[in-house]
Length: 559
Ligand SMILES: Cc1ncc(C[n+]2csc(CCOP(=O)(O)OP(=O)(O)O)c2C)c(N)n1
Ligand SMILES: [Mg+2]
Image (cartoon, rainbow, N blue to C red):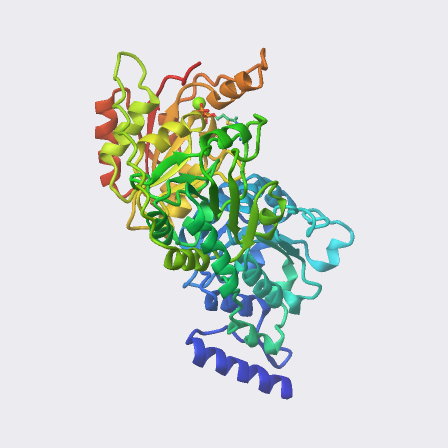
């Protein structure tokens, strides 16, 4: 009687606080609220009502009676599912829910999970587990050692020990994903748990707010401000976290007060600073030697929202230019601790940048002069050059367009030629895992329906997540997919030269017809072979309410 009373109380609270009907059913004469319904209500209350998934039998009980106020986005491969959720979470700045099929589905999603992990994307990845009584005999579809499987790409993973712990595990996952440093988490749920009776006190989870604060105290702010004020030639290096926590305007104020040039941190997964701002210098190279050479002459390097540094190609050298000190601010203790040089502060990027921009003294040294305009690319006969493609995009796309970059050998041209002025204008695979741009573009476009998303993808990269085209068509997500088809893994040709490696087999990919592939998945498509064709096709695609793929045969850069 007491139990029934408290459940009724819970129901009353749920209904009056959230105004949403929770299913109650009678089981052996008792009124029962299921783990399933409590979990959906928790998700609803925490604002997570989009589910990105690809189901199997273990997941069907979770998807039963899918609530009308939730939306399910089906990806045909788990790389697409995780990528879509990654884009959605990055662009909204809120956690996204992924539902994968046991171990195999998790495995298929792990390449995309590597990117999400490096990007600090708050993802709650759930996977269906076998029913509890069959797990110990390792029945088909048992996720063996489920909590180990996604490590080290998740911050936390769990398989609740009882069905009644599922809502608590989901609540913990939601908070863990968002707490700094944010990142993916994993919950494996035996499928019989969803129908079990929930703990009547689960309602207490719905209201919980868990937050982190982390700005300077007075003395620590003064120490940093004094160093910045005393520097004669300071430089800012801004990373993805500045864009992720929407601190772009504070970064601009700080750069303008310091009259400091601004570089974007190497291997940039996001664009933290307007590329048309007079203080903008460009994308730092990704080698030890290259970074030192580029930053030489500065006496203080302030890195905000990036590791020190995200190197790629190995070119040994001094970690810092002669005479330079370095100070880094990050939300990630691991990033702070593992740097080889400089001091680091762990804190909230938005709050710390704001405090610095408010407090630092206005400099009277000369302001950096704007970069010279890049020369228009020459248009000769034959295949289009990547430079021409970027010039056409820059001329045609709206000012607030969002770019996904997975055209690996042309990244420098992109940064030189595409104006990216607004917050959230650029995404790139943070762990370098291909198969990123096409699905992430879908998630970003769902999150940003009033902006246009253009995914610039190489012919090699496009094949890793090509089934994203079906999802784009299915939900009419109007992404423009621009495939730069140079017939080769261009970046690997470049890397083979860097590594002085000869005789590598099979770096070319002749004979892929993306126009036909797109049609097969239900996406309108065309091939553009001249600058004029491309301009017309892109303008039409940007007017369309449905997705479009444009294949542009291009010449391979420098090979
Ligand atoms: C999942 C994954 N597999 C392989 C690679 C290695 N890789 C890096 S760049 C690249 C070539 C990409 O070619 P394409 O998309 O055609 O761009 P291009 O370099 O020609 O501009 C490959 C295979 C990777 N980064 N990620
Ligand atoms: Mg290529």
